[in-house]
Amino acid sequence: MITLIMLIPAATAVLLPLFAGRPNVREGTTLLGAVLLFATVLQLMPLVLAGETPELPVWTVIPGLTIAFSVEPLGMLFAAIASGLWILNSIYSIGYMRAEQAHRQTLFYVCFALALAATMGIALAGNLFTLFLFYELLTFTTWPLVTHRATREARDAGRLYLLMLFGASTMLLLPAIAWTGLAAGTLDFTPGGILAGNVGGIGLGILLALYVFGTAKAAVMPVHFWLPAAMVAPTPVSALLHAVAVVKAGVFTILKVIVYIFGAETLAASDRANWLVVVAGITVIAASLIALRQDNLKRRLAYSTISQLSYVILGAALFTPLAILGAALHIAAHAVSKITLFFAAGSVHVGAHVDDISRMDGIGRRMPFTMGAFTIGSLSMIGVPPTAGFLGKWFILIAALQVKEWFVVAVIVVSTLLNAGYFLPIVYRAFARAPAKGEGRIAESPWPMVASLVITAAVTVFLFVWPGAPFQLAEMLAGNAAIDASGSSVVEFPLEGGFR
Image (cartoon, rainbow, N blue to C red):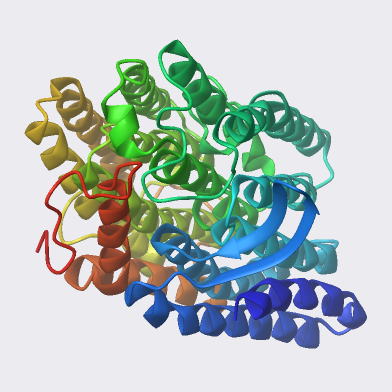
């Protein structure tokens, strides 16, 4: 199954150029690859939920550097999210790219498939070496998507994208991995971590900083500038960057390193890791304040993503099982909510030829499905039940109250108000104001786009009503975070219904 998960998107990418002159077959191939990938990922779900860890060693490059795959709860959650959303993003892309009469559509779908192959490699990586290889592959397979429009602005954004992501990973993340290997003698992901007793004092804080800022895909300030710049890309690419693959790969990497490399208990016992809460909190608030000033809808959503991602880092930085559970849930909630918002932004662009919030007066009356879905996504980003965004923030908040981390409590409260401040005015403008005079014809975008955003909006509500497997996987990850370096649980942490 692991082999198939890696091969399906790669094979899809190989087949697509054969149908460059037959758009229907080409896009049907994309959809088939996406459905097969998701179905194969789901085949592994029962094994992981049963407590097993499927593994696949592939190749030992040199002693100590092995390409290997291993499926633990966080990787299972990430793989399921990415593969499932690839289906809906592909449906949406068909409507968007045809409506825009976009050029180089075959290259677009090929790079999308390759990006999903890289994402699966990150999700299922069994060690830091494997994760790093696929992390870099994801950067290079998504760069052509960022520059897809081939304008000067797109090329400039592409240069910044490569400079920041590749530069940070080679100058910071790679040295961190090398340091880890030399100190611990292994790069394998292990519950309880591998660094206890091997790195301590100020070295522990420096190593954590190398991982956090070297993983620039997580967009923690100040390594966030690439993300707003990349909004020049077509909207399906923005959805890929924000919801399906790139930024999720960033926060996934940091969360996985905290649980399986450092060990949450090791970091909790050190006073050299406290800075991470401050950096994540500042990013949450600062990005929200910048979002308030953005009139371009996609740029506002981009800064919202920077803020929302740091909720995950904020939860991870508390180093408690409950907070890590909340961080994992927020990865899933943000994925379905933010892809809904970007789908809606692209729908407004296609159906109304509008990109600026100041021109969206009354648009909800003519595009009710689009703006209705946008409203649900907005409420989820604010954290209003019954939407999925409430769950992760709730658990992080409760965890912060338990350990009396009042800074985190204040960040969550203030940022929630700021989220409402930059999302609700859009909803109000779209539904409560009269349409502006002189605007051209406004109507819902093509049905593949509308169907995709309606489904993701429905999933946003469904995950609150029935969190199901995502909650169980997050709970299992939290259980792994409650294990110390000796393999013993440091707290009483019931896995069956522990937080229900």
